[in-house]
Image (cartoon, rainbow, N blue to C red; front, side, top):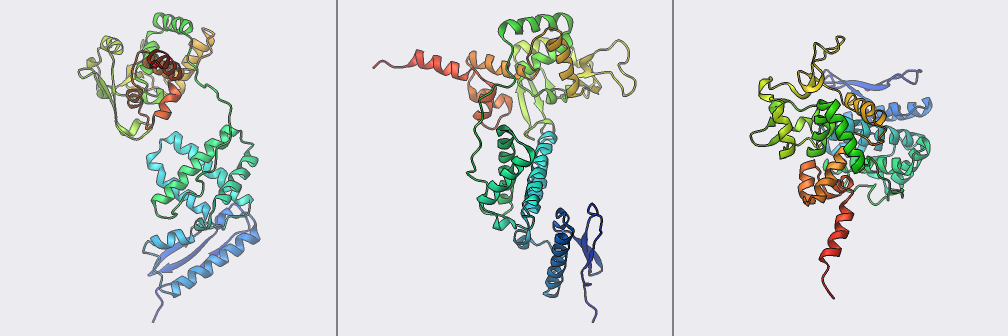
Length: 386
C-alpha cells in the first residue's frame, strides 16, 4: 500500500539571503514549511533548526497528522515569538490605516531583530514571560538608539500586537502587561498659532489664496484629518442636512463617521455651488493630470476630478505661512486650534470626542490644550462656600 505522504526534505542554500524550506507531498499536494528558520542568520544554527523541523514534521506525519486540515490547537503550541508577532500583525492589518500599519510593521521588524540578536529565535510564544519582553524591548532600544518617546511608542504598539494573540486564543495573558513607559518631558507638539498670528494667517489666505483658506478652515471647524479631507467627494457632502458622511474606508478608525457642518463653514460651501459638479469630484481637488500639470485656468483645492496629495497641502502651508508669513505653526495645528476654540465656547468634551472620531477622552484632551484652563476657571467660579 502506497503512503499518502512523502518523506520531508530540506532545501537549503549557502547564500544566507535565499529562503530555506522543507517540502513534502500529502495526498499528491505539495506542502512547504519554513516555520521561522530563515530568521536565523547563522548557517550552522539554521541547519540545526531546519533539520529538527524536518524530523518533527516527519514524526507528525507518521502519527497521522493531516497538514491539509487547519490546526488551531497546534498553532499556539509550536509558534515562536517571532512567528506570533507577524501572525498578530497580519490579523490587525485590516483594521489599521496604511500609515498605522507601516508603523506597526516597523515595530515588528525592530523586535524581530532584537530577538535574533539575543539568540531567542526559537523562543515559543507560550513560554514568553514579562522578563523576555522587557529584555527584548531594551535590546531593541540599544540597537536603534531610541529616545524615551520612541521606546514608549514601540512598547505600546508591541502591547497591542500581543493583545491580538489573546483574541485568537494563542496566549491567555499579555506578557508585556505592566511594563512601564519611560518618563518623557512634557512637550506640546502642533502648537496652534497665537490669536494675533491666526489673524494674520486668516487675512493673508482669505485675500490671496481663498481656495486653500477654505481647506484650512475645514480642518479648523470639522476636526477632520487633512488626509481624510482630501478624500472627501461631493457625494459625501450633505448640505441639506448640514453634514459630511465619511465612509469607513477613508477614516483612521475604519468606522463611518458623520461630521456636522456648522453655520460658519456652510456659508463657504454654499458659495461653491457644489450641485453643478459631478458627485465623484473631490471637494478639494484639482484638474491636474499626470505629466501634464494643471489644465486650463483652473487652480487646485477646488471641486475637481483629481485627488490632491497630502504632501501638496503641507508644502503649500509651509510656502504660504511658514516661509511667506514667518509664522512657525504646523498646518495640523489648525485642528488643535479648532478644539481649543470649541472648548472655550462651552462645547462638551464628549461632543468634541465624537466630532473628532476619537475612541477615548484622553485622545481628545491632547488636542484641546485649554482644558486645564477651563477647569481652573470652573473651580474658581463654581466652588461652594465653606
